[in-house]
Image 1 (cartoon, helix red, strand yellow):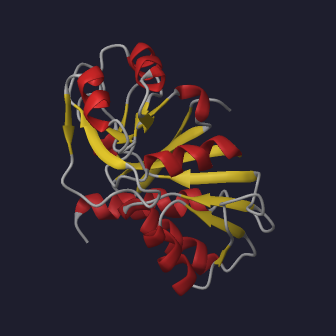
Image 2 (image 1 turned 180 degrees about the horizontal axis):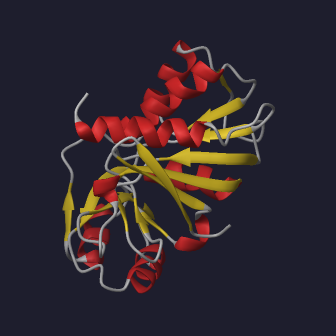
Length: 218
């Protein structure tokens, strides 16, 4: 494995050790989460999982993990823990997610969990957040939404599993709180990839094969 993958695996294994039998667990999306799924399968503990993407669900089922629905009135309503990767983490605990275009589902799962754990390799820690910032947009009124947003580029990728159009904000991220509020208030924006510090319990970061836990909200 390359150095980045070694760190992703180390962070994933460390986070898997936080999972206890009987938990309802949210599973994120992406390359770091792929290592998490294997680590959970290796532990062979009894957990009920919900996934944030078809890719995660497919791999989890193939590894023998118990995956339940998070959709509709009959879906799981509450999670004990959610674990996911990130694209960027700043010193204040603001996080950018959505490189894999699953950020709306990932935010729903993180918000439903008592504890949200973020797992990253060392290069994901940044001194300040920078563009691109992923967005999921309604197709209805898309031209008007793009005009209201301004500095946005549509991403040439398939739509989200829920039919949303994937785009990227390319403007300034100097004030994440104000930007998050502005984006959330813009009609046509389903959700954005900014995760506020109050959502996250800790960030598990690997540096080589060594991991450390950065506590955000213990």
